[in-house]
Length: 432
Image 1 (tube, rainbow, N blue to C red):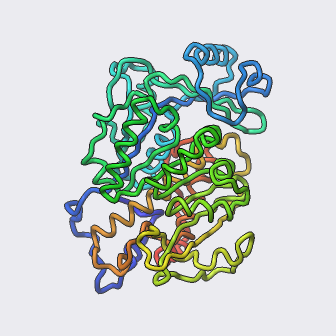
Image 2: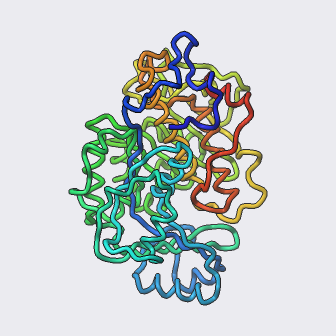
Image 3: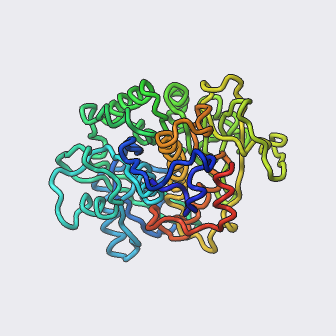
């Protein structure tokens, strides 16, 4: 597994020269580190439309909505005939995150879901497989009869995305296709709220089984909030679900606002941490916030300037590493904020997948922590029960950069890893 960015050998592990593990040793036998994700396998079809097009089909702008398969087909055929379709790629919130994780880490992850039993060259299932990184293990997918799900991503001139979804077989993952041993061995289990939308569906029951296995095994559960419409409709259920099972939650400011009833980003983050151990909050042109817990024994003060917003000196301990609240004798909430990398791309044509990319960087850092613990279990880095390998400040910087690359390439999935960073940044990453 690669650690974030290109590293000099002497900085590969932040331990003393006397105890540093030589890189030439064969360490593969120590154990496999991977992420498992459950997804409604889906193909994203992007098209540019105007506001009147949404009104004609009665679509709610900026939200994800389920539509009858015939309506989705009509929209697809019309946009194709008009030449407004700009791309068709493998999609899905979890699918995007797993793909990006595989690109960043250059290592394995496992996808659970349902796929067409009879795949033909050129069909949607074929496109899904061809545009998914080869490190994403698809061998545990459930084969089903029926079409792959399609999501029409309709982009209006203001760059807002509206999704119209034809379900196909996306909800057919059943409990018997949840491999207990795979989840128990994961560094994290990734979900989205889309899986919880239809409580009568097989995938809902499969998801509940998976989170119970993860909780019993101590595997962190990571939840992406998906879309604000789901949050509004299932708010109380989701809060109970998050409090019961979720270790890390990720969402944008609108989604989090609907969830916890607070529109100030920092206060929303503070309130979110009453339900989960770590939270990633993306705020568009204002960058992103990351918050978690850390035991007072392991707090590290920032070396940067202190900043005050709705919480005075909120970044005072941003050089600390994230922990579960239950693992802290004296838990303290820690926060960090970072503005868009280089001010953001010069031109943003589509924001699809930016949040998924940020979350993939967070997952990579979680896995890096598991990986290092396997290699150097007696390292001072593991004196406490930490969730992340790096400080929340550095994790936020990494997530911010991954998000920038997705926005910059106008695609929800990374095609390659991140460019090399300056040596000074690389070295400071491991010192924190």
